[in-house]
Image (tube, rainbow, N blue to C red; front, side, top):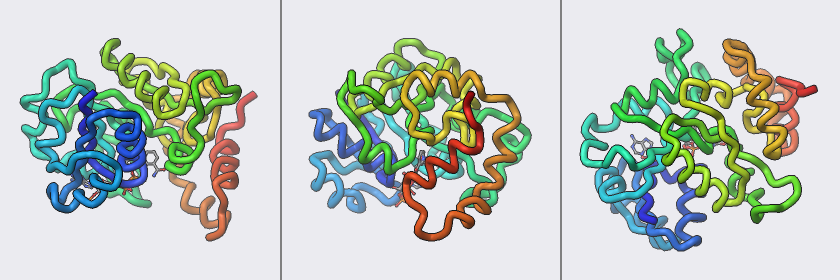
Length: 248
Ligand SMILES: NC(=O)c1ccc[n+]([C@@H]2O[C@H](COP(=O)([O-])OP(=O)(O)OC[C@H]3O[C@@H](n4cnc5c(N)ncnc54)[C@H](OP(=O)(O)O)[C@@H]3O)[C@@H](O)[C@H]2O)c1
């Protein structure tokens, strides 16, 4: 498959590496042009591109950049990308910690619905509710007992199916998170968010999410991370995330 990946940080870079290793034709881009990503592209067996070349002719686009940067992408970036090509949104909103306040999101607009409006096309939300370290290190072959899950939300059944296949390919059980309007269930500080759950528990967690509850929990994270201290381990962070929403 021809896969264009915009953003080669913790999430986009890991997906690019895994998907290139799996034999896909991967093109990677950041905000600085093809030359800036060439060393990384060469290291992982991908092609260096700018954002336009990354999406051009792709069968799948993965967009893994900070949420506020999405609003600054060229308005016509996806103009020539056919409607059937899935565009994956991995973004999360952390106002006051990492991101500037965005009024529509503060008013309760679902994050990926906002992203979709910025891009002027539908998106599939995936890889947002797994920690970068889990994505990099904890993938397992299909069928492995306790394999971790990643939620996938979106409206186009075929696009969602394709993205669920990619989740499986990079080592995780895909769990259908419903339509994009329901993707608030996998946003920061919801029960299934970055908790290293298997598929059955992820399904339970998505159902257990209560609309409007997560932002207040998210906004306490800085304090909670501070309490964990600078030497917090991956297990500490997962335990903290789980403690925000204990599941029965
Ligand atoms: N880290 C996690 O554990 C985690 C987990 C799940 C989801 N996420 C979400 O996934 C997204 C990416 O996270 P990350 O941790 O991978 O971020 P990151 O490590 O900071 O990487 C971000 C990437 O986006 C690129 N970028 C920034 N602005 C851009 C623009 N305008 N056009 C093109 N490329 C641009 C950056 O390159 P340049 O700045 O050099 O252009 C960089 O390659 C975020 O929205 C984050 O909330 C993160």
